[in-house]
Image (cartoon, rainbow, N blue to C red; front, side):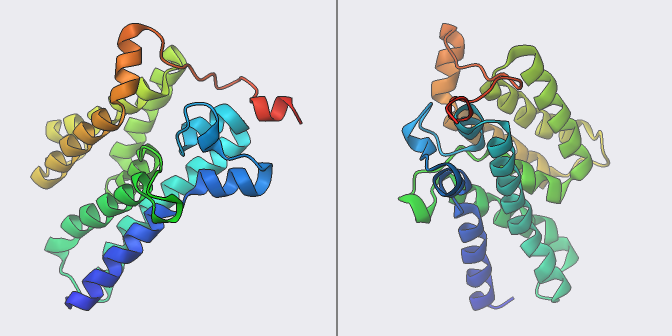
Length: 218
């Protein structure tokens, strides 16, 4: 693969990840910048909290699609015969990680984005959809039981490398396991404030059935 094609694809993956869906959707549809409310985070969770379930779902799906699309750029290169089958997984991981970095540090909104969980989910769906489905189930069950998005995200992220290592869906792939544990460390780092609040018992809860402040005022 040529250097020019690689650089172009890397830039495309970063720009996809950088799309600030919560900021653009919140301002464009509600006239509300979610970064100025709630946790101040430009992600799906804060959108759910401030703008409600419909807006939060839209933002989350867009963020998932960002990660999925960026990761699938590797498949495009494969079908273009720019990379071989043995390189496919490696490039999927590379482009997916770049999209996550773009989500956390988006160029369009002064490099202040979200925590990358939904974008990571899109990436994992593109790499290992069966395992991703199990992680989604773990996230939902934990959220229903605890109402803590942060705890649900951390446990679901940890489940991916652990289940990969156990070979639940096929032979363990070392590169995928290393990636999974690396992402778990990244998620723990981006949620360090949430972890402190969890330990202190004052972490924000999110009810799947609560109405948003924005909707209450409409």
